[in-house]
Amino acid sequence: RALVVPGSQEVDRQAIEEGLDQVFSAAGFQWREAGCSMCLAMNPDQLSGNEISASTSNRNFKGRQGSPTGRTLLMSPAMAAVAAVEGKVTDVREHLEN
Image 1 (cartoon, rainbow, N blue to C red):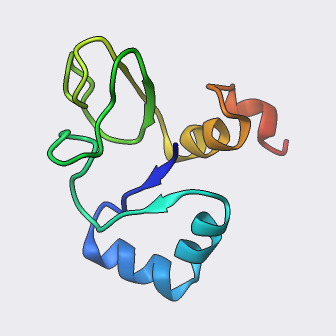
Image 2 (spheres, helix red, strand yellow):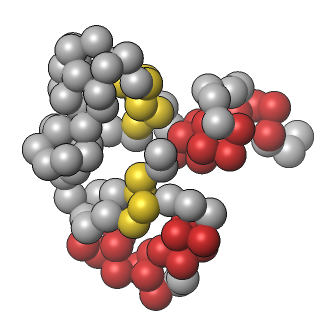
């Protein structure tokens, strides 16, 4: 599964104005309200079991995203985008133009 959670209402508004919510939704992502979601496992957006999260959040301690056995891999937005496209963690440098 793939979630997009804008970091603020301003980012959400700008993304929607640019049509990015539609782009991500068409690609199979779930567009969430701005703010915390999976980063705190404060709602049903949580890891379960041994799931791995490619996250642009800023913390990754054990159980933060809901599962004590899941893994949170912190990465830049570019790395998260490449992971979403590839379906696995990939070296973003392979996708950058020189």
